[in-house]
Image (cartoon, rainbow, N blue to C red; front, side, top):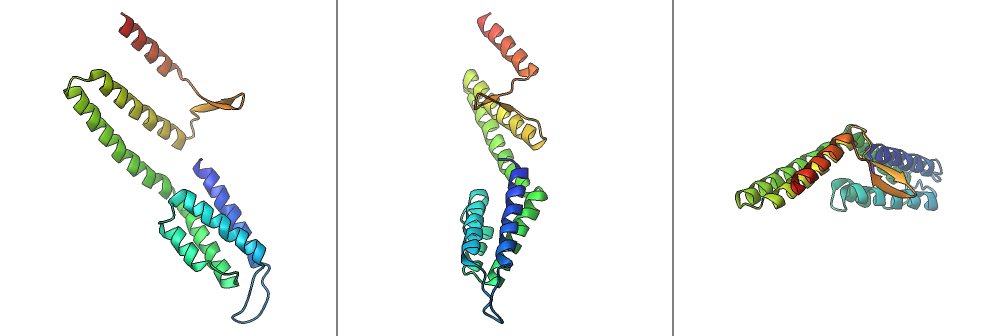
Length: 177
């Protein structure tokens, strides 16, 4: 799933919250909104937050704690939380956190490959490093809008670029030689 899809979904949730907000009834402290729309907003938002951040993240826990009953103020709080998530997504903060974690994992795998090479496991080192490099390049391509897959007959297939094909043929020729 791409960041644009997450931003689009967060906007849909904001609109759902605004729709619930428009159904307000009552006066003073007891302003209620329509239950069906409110709980659709609440359940959908909790699912969204859980899928992106996990159930332990502050966005999820704050939404779960604050947006509990179909009151106007609770609905407004929920809309505010989802707007904050949308701002983070648009600002690239989710990508940045993911990038930091990926860089840490990338570094660990490079160390593993180095260790395998020092123990004369050159094939295992090459496979480990090649896999990590391929995944890192795929992530960079995705962040920069370069498609690495295409759909054919309902299946996602990898897009093969000339550089990779050339490398694979050279490698195969070298191994057979």
